[in-house]
Image 1 (spheres, rainbow, N blue to C red):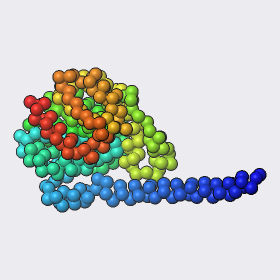
Image 2: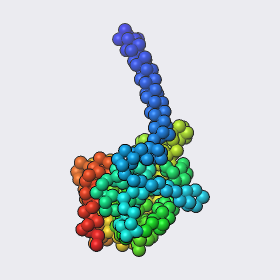
Image 3: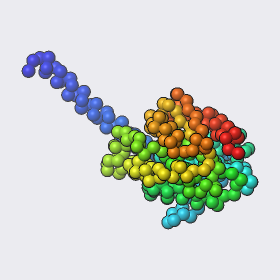
Image 4: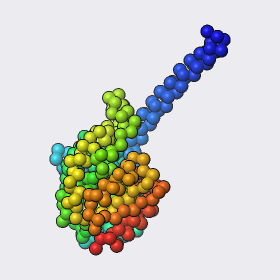
Length: 303
């Protein structure tokens, strides 16, 4: 071995060793942080209450028995039985506080009764118990919706929550007046399976990660199959549908899901809004635009 080779090995050996140590330490810090953060803040009632109290927005938390567990939802806005309802359904992972900025928005509160639910498996709804069947997910949403009084109901959904909203509208056309789908994952043949989804499915990852990651992984691994089961239901929808999707969406393929909506939802009912720079997290990053399009949709598209 030459002097150069010997020097190289003396250098590269410790470098690889300490690089692996560094990666391991960072991974452990990430795992600890996500467990601590989720344990202290994600969907916790005191955190929700503190958020709305700070803004002086009245909010009520409700629990409803469902099957062998309970569902949780929060309500803000108008209390009138003749008000229009905005009913929010989150993605995966997620929980009801994903839409808290909308629930606290002054313009929306003045015009709508608003409800956001924890889907089964998340937050205060059968926490940690994955429900992969989209029909059962929609039945859970309807079990809450059916207890509410309203004039018209509009479902606002994000990502995984969009096919839940679609199934809900298909099965209950007399109850749903409109659907807003933000960055939907509806196309069964274009479900992306990224490397981090595979890592999350490892037994070790499942043992170390919090329950909501485990639930989201179960949903992810079965999503394409479940979407195939409800593919024919999209044509049964009688409500108006607004599909909001960014061309820069790396998690829900833009072209495939736009084409799916055009092919499976009546053109008389479908409206599409897109932006080149908008990504998958549009309900947060582009909240102002999403709110504007929701209001425009309800005012002009749905009569």
